[in-house]
Image (tube, rainbow, N blue to C red):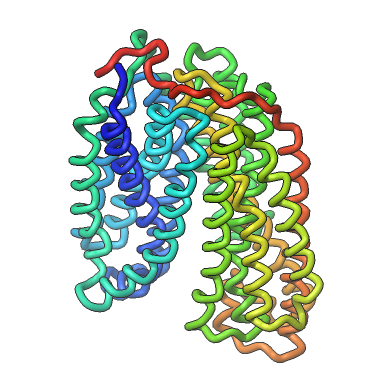
Length: 492
């Protein structure tokens, strides 16, 4: 069943609203955490308000993507919206930190599904050749949530109370629900439905949770070589091994092993793992560098990070439009990543003596360079699979990006902190990089801290270089001119 252009536009708008809802909730909470801790107590658990959301959303991403291939986008998207909104109500009504963390865990399940399904729904109704131009909308949603979230969270917390950072989800979610419900009824589902593979879901959840807990605790709550971290990482390896063994025999695998052998999807998954992970390292750790090593005022650090986010958004949009115009997804990342590498090597070279403005400018150039790979890789991967695998491949890319971010942030933090502890013995008792912000340091110590960050910037440049080499292996396949909707499927 074909859709009119008006119906396609309605679906796209609704999907983007759902994506914005989930993306906003990842950023709006940060500025409210101090107020939440003061009111609910148990301040030592406050980091779990953010961590548990990321953990459950990461686990949900590939699972819900695959389930949408089996049971249709509309029912899964509606379930995710209702779960997300219901959990938002529980968050707003929380009377203890434990209750809030539990509600955030449920909210992450819905939020992870919204991100994956929004991109999959658009892939259903827009031809691969035309998907690139929608990258501008995706990039705008991510940039908007990153810029609006912290500010909106601060305003709501200050003037009406922190529960309103969750109450605000209700009108946004209702709008998304009303917008897409009718049009989504025409989206297809497969005629043959397979049973849900609960064993694979359990193994994937177990392995991912163990890995993310180990990475979250390592170097902060526990030393990296302590028994809890070793047990968590061994459990993650065991869970991952068992999961992929089962996937090789499953009729409907969550992460099909054939993806890894595909000459487009396999390299794309590895390249975005590295590129997105490196980008998040810059976004998460650069503020500490600006504030501690370069003595940038606390109130200005956020402003200095805006150029990185905006430049990534700009070139992601341009890359998507280029893919639509030319039909090739290989060239933009091959041009952009070298720019990011050069910018980070330059920042590493001047890290000890740079001004905050110079550092912000070089981060902006790095953002220009890394932006093109995000839309190009998504178009490439979705174009490489049949319509029946759109949800699975979209979930696989989201999962790869999330793991890349978690693993590389943990590695970069350990690298910087290890160098600082070795070079600046006076800060040897810090439990994490965030502690540096609260400690007085001398000019000599600032220089040593800047040297540690210089090595980190060079390491991220190496990560981007490896991503570039891997992306060079992505095969070129002509972009299809028709949307995938309808292949082997029937309308709901």
